[in-house]
Length: 251
Image (cartoon, rainbow, N blue to C red; front, side, top):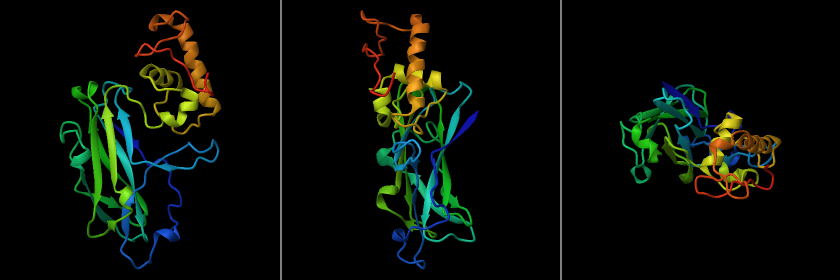
């Protein structure tokens, strides 16, 4: 079974243009990645923070999931066209450790920006295999100039995906540190169990939901002591033998 994930979390002003981004409407259109994490700036006014990488793990997927498609948004700097336009994407070997055909499917030679769109999506496919149970792999991709587009901002031309089939610290964890505290695999597994979510990037460190999840984890510890190890003070220990504690806003 194949799973589909979109990494373009929000789109702002999709049919609008920022004057600072255009030198002239007659200039050749430019293309760049347009990827965001959401929810780090305020519970009701989350300002998107641009990111150039993500970490994905198959570990929380059912065993019949053999691959996952990651959708990466691209943004056009210029005007929309009344016809489809092509752009090129390729593997960046300097930041790629995975093997084509084993860890990821070969990339398409061209992506498509559909007619009348300023933002569109290109897909890369990660392949689940036994080596990912013990090793994290990476796939780096980069945009390449083509007939229809020049390249946009230099720091938005590359994107890196780190992936495995084991528990990995998610990219959003540090932003939630004041609720969730120092990362551990045990904490993350438990937060996924009680919340049903692997991605908490939509939360803020002081949100009621975040605190509720930590309290639910604490309750799980109490209800299922046979599943955990404890120190002499009754604290649950993580995989490194350290007591599990939460951040200031956590439980």
